[in-house]
Every structure is written in C-alpha cells, then in structure tokens.
Amino acid sequence: MGIAPAPGADRRRVMGRSTNERAAAAAGTFYPSDPDELAAQVDALLEGAHPHRDAGEPLALIVPHAGYVFSGPVAGTAYALLRGREIEKITLLGPAHFVPLHGAAVPGTDVWRTPLGPVRIDPDLREIAVEAGAIADDRPHEPEHSLEVQLPFLQRIFGSGLRVLPVAVGVAGAVDVADLIDALLPHALAVVSTDLSHYHDRTTAERLDRRTAEAALHALDLADGHGMQRDLKT
Image 1 (cartoon, helix red, strand yellow):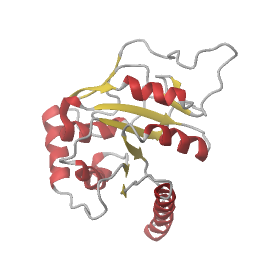
Image 2: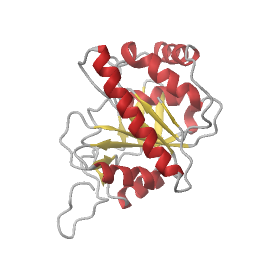
Image 3: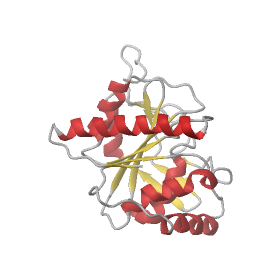
Image 4: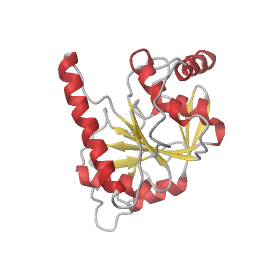
C-alpha cells in the first residue's frame, strides 16, 4: 500500500514539511474560527445527540465531514458515544480531496492546530502506519478538511491529553486499507470520515447508504469470528 518508494528510498522520510505544526485549514468555512463560538457549537451538538447505547463500547465510528451546519448533528450523535470513555489514542482516516495520492499518507508534523488549541500527533501510531505501508507526507493533509473537522469534537470530549493519527487515503485497494486499519485498531479507536454519497435523491441515498452500512457491519461480524469484538456506530 502507498506510493512505491524508489530503490533505496526511506518510506519514513517526511515530504512537504516546512514546520512542525499544521495550521487549521477549514476554520471559518467548515466550522467557526472563533474558539468560544466553536466550543459552544460543538457542545450543543453533543448535548443534543441521542445515540443508541445498546451495542457496547465502540471501537470504530463512521462520521461525516461536511460543514457543521450540514453534518454536525450526525457527527454529534456518533461522538456522543465516546463521552465518559477513557480513550487516549484515535486514528482518523479520511479521503484526500485535493492532492493526488496513491495509498495512504500520515503527517510528519507533530502537532495539528484548531481554534481550540493544539492536538498532538502520536509518533507510535505513525510508526505502525508506516510499517503497514503508509507514507509520511504532509502535502495531502495541508489543505484537507475531512480529518480536521473531526478534531474539535474530540477536543471537547477528551481535552488536551488526546493523541491522534490522521491518515489521508487516496487511490488504494480495499484490502490494503483494511490491512492498515487492522494494524492500527488494536492500539487506537478508529474514526472513519466519509460523506458516503453526494447529490442523490433521498430514496437513492438511503438505499446506497444502507447497503454500505450493512457491508460494514458484515465485515465487523467476520472480524468477531476471528476473536475481535468491534462495534460500529454511525
């Protein structure tokens, strides 16, 4: 998985990094840039959520990445499941919309910032991802919103002690991505960022999204058969 390195190249060499921090790229567009306004909006979305709690403690979430005005209530419903949990590490996986990417890329930076403050990138998760085939490249992450918009929810739930690993996914085989998730899942909760579908009428969108959800649940049932209990919430 990932971009095949040239002979003798080190996959862990970081590309595109000029600073050790990534500034917020989506603040002021996908979510508020004012810290107080952002905190209040996220808290309201979490408080207004009514998630189902009959499936046990989730080890994976599927969440949307549109602007909060569109996707905030759905995201809040998913993230409300994490309140009260003791979680130290989270792997975020989402599509690379702007920079061409083959395989998956993790950031070389050690800190990502949102208006709510810094979020630390976990070096151990990064090493696991690289060993599993990801490349270290900041370029796909710099303009990307799909992972960044998840951070304010996590910051309001877990505070400053949380460590994350953002993973941008480009053109990649399903098995390769599954192998990457499988390598990371024992060490961190997985959050998969996706809008599932765009521009369909409601009936078509519900049919396609239901099929996607059923396929994901079937995959998790297969994982349970291998001794891994995984609960999925959308």
